Image (cartoon, rainbow over all chains, first blue to last red; front, side):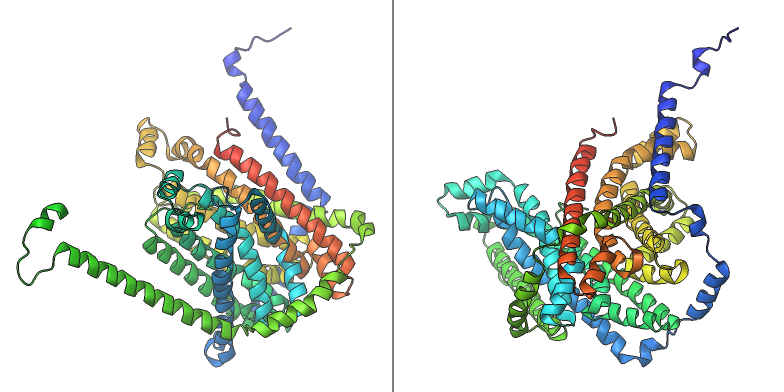
Length: 274
Length: 282
């Protein structure tokens, strides 16, 4: 015996497909967890232990902020690492970007070479760079600055090159048509067009570098990251909490500042909003 | 106005438009000089703080080149042993990205002016700012103290910072949605959850996917560093190899990481361009 069910009462094809997709995604996620050997029970920890940790952390030693002078020096160190890497890296990235963009490159082979260079710089993990540089230039902020510089050249060289390629061709052609050289075309037609996005991206780069400077500090690059890892290694959790608060304040403040500066200086919309 | 003013006589004690323009240019010049001086001072200050010396750099290059030579040839025999670790790093980043995307959507809805009531919004904005302000490394150190060494603290740290980053971008995206769209859907008698479903989500879904893909790239790179600090994976192998001065093994790990990051960048670039052209959602 068959039941006569009207077709409208049955789940539609779309719904079935959606359920299928959902089940597939859940299965994939479950498989990934399974492959790592993580089950739901591994997230269950002894909360008594967490509570103990919290008791060790609170109240944070906020008094460190005014008793420990070296704290602010290391904060300034971290800021200056990010700043220096942004300025130097941004400058180098701009030069390489002009070689890497199709419309300004002197020769296609130069373009290929500089694109490859950018890909390499972007993809070599900063971990390995800092580990090599620590051996080469010694423990200290300088190694971290060089590492951050290499990373920002890679990332922002690509962004700048893309911005240059999106520049208006007509202006370049009209400047060339009055008899200017290739350099003059770049100076008077391309550079004014890409400068706003360049400056906006520099502020963004500062944000990124500031965040990246903290883990590099842990590996021996100095700055606030080093202080934090040091306190953590000594199990001085109240100090750790105070440093954490300071780091959050610094990053949030700098982000606000760079957002504000980007919005007030740049009238043109940023080309790459990611 | 300017062309009319050019030929008119200017009353005494008042500048011609040309002079005004010239003064404006001079002002701008001064501004540029001031900015340049400020920048140079800041660079000098930070170079002093960071102990930047050209001599150190030259010495470092001379010292560094023999070290780099020690990395070659890479130890190809280790490649099979490292693949599971590479998988751990990838899966860690992938799970963190997926969960970050899932959780960032409600956070973004609660943080945007045109959807959420004010108290909820303020609390959510503060929460997001906190998540963004806490570097992964700090989260990782705290989470390791809770969960112990392993992939779980790394996963959670990446997940939390992904939520923060994605939620902020999405909330900004939601706030830019035209009010007419929301009104039009609400005008048909839709409840607020239906407004979210039919007006907000279709609008921000491409952005969510594109930013999520970008975030995946970032998570892979951050996962390598977190791995070295105790989250396992290829970063851990790399740092232990470096610490035991086994440079050729470290070189192999670096090459694998390079392949991984390059691959994820390609894949995410490809998928992102498809998403942004609308090919994937239709």
